[in-house]
Image (cartoon, rainbow, N blue to C red; front, top):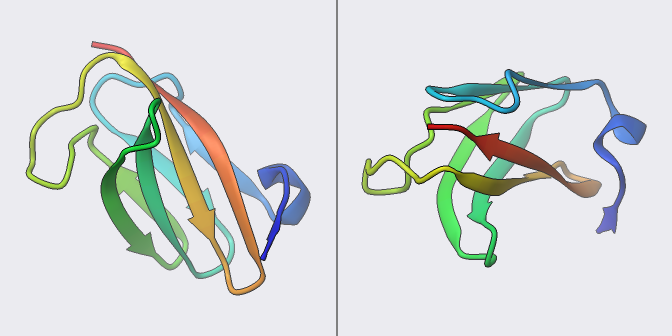
Length: 88
């Protein structure tokens, strides 16, 4: 699987970024995504068809702390990551 910059493979919009309550990742292809903390620990698995909503919570519903996180988006052909900043 090839890794590329998000903007080189397909239209992607992450809004708002940084965020306080929730962020939406708009993506034109079917995808799955995982949110990781700065140390690489997986926090939340999400999936969607055209968009992904993340409320800044881990798998067990706990709000994450103010920090930098990474969203790994996978399509059938590519894997890309994007930084997401949480403000609290």
